[in-house]
Length: 351
Ligand SMILES: NC(=O)c1ccc[n+]([C@@H]2O[C@H](COP(=O)([O-])OP(=O)(O)OC[C@H]3O[C@@H](n4cnc5c(N)ncnc54)[C@H](O)[C@@H]3O)[C@@H](O)[C@H]2O)c1
Image 1 (cartoon, rainbow, N blue to C red):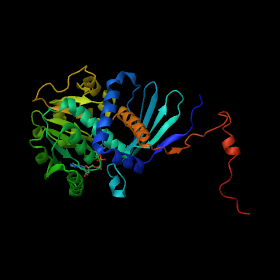
Image 2: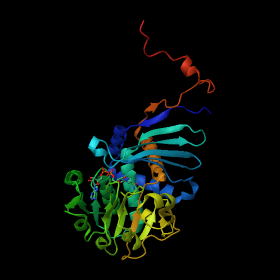
Image 3: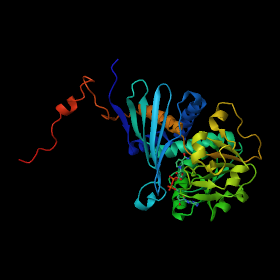
Image 4: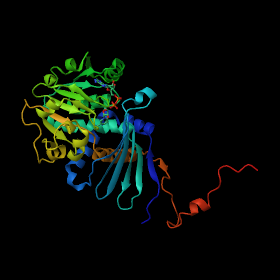
């Protein structure tokens, strides 16, 4: 068997068009199925906490994961002040590769895809942690991730009304515009405390490189589910430590979340449950209507593995097949030098 040396390429506009064509509800639905499948076979994966390169204004992270047949990695940054220079806070791309040969099968944009998979991971947690009768959600932080969080909860969990708050009113107006265009009801509030009053679910998805206290114990009501998305880096948290102490806390991969999540504020033996254990039936999710549950989301490599697998299959379904020569195609794999020997100079030296 001769392996093919070409790699499928999916750029940002291409993925946007593919998702537009598939429709967001169907995309959320299918991606949730892929992710739940992968989380249920958690022990089969070779896992590690991501490698992070920190600087004054942000972080660049590398997130690998593999099973016996596929290897995936994501490159992703987090720079909360990037909007000042016209760039996104979070930007990403990634690769899906064949374990048997190491050949990269797919190189894809993952900025849009990260927003999709983060929202789907939030819903995957909320399905086992939020009260089943949940209909309202507060959304604190109305930036790039927020529409995806709102719409995934609307389509997959039956959330009818979103309570919105952001320190930047323009971000809230942008979010309102997108949600109203899709028939989703919103209410705007002047503070996070006002926005969370009486809701079933609270999603915090703010960006600030600081130990913020978006949610304090006084704002938490019995039975609430808290989906903490923005606290995902050392020195970058959203929940007051007492909110965590008085709740049952669920995480993706404990060794990573203890460093990066809101629980970085608590001792290393603070009890948490890994979400896969609930999904695989080894641990209980919500056990009573009154308890407060927290999903301390930081983003784990397996979610990107699921998303890359989903994009690969969606491309096949839609007949998308753009290929690049990321790896040289060689008649004789031992003759790499031929690439140089046969290359024509692009620019002739001036006579
Ligand atoms: N857990 C995960 O898997 C995951 C994935 C993607 C992004 N994130 C994190 O989610 C956060 C949001 O990402 P984004 O791409 O939407 O960023 P963004 O910069 O586009 O939006 C963040 C919004 O938060 C608002 N904000 C900042 N401080 C606030 C405060 N105190 N109260 C209310 N609003 C506040 C900002 O005004 C901005 O509109 C980032 O911190 C990012 O690192 C986590």
